[in-house]
Length: 70
Image (cartoon, rainbow, N blue to C red):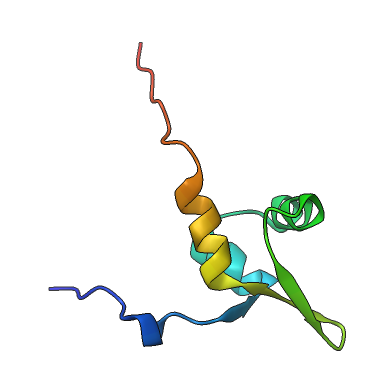
């Protein structure tokens, strides 16, 4: 039996590596979306951290996939 994460369990910011692991997005696509402004990030020294909650809201706003079978 699994339980859904509570709001306090969801991180505010995650590294690019953690974002990629959690969402399945490649590093390249992540940086492209950051450049386009679709994802929001902050710099902590040399490290880039992604606003996880805003990123998940962006993913939720994407259209559902249409799967076509032959």
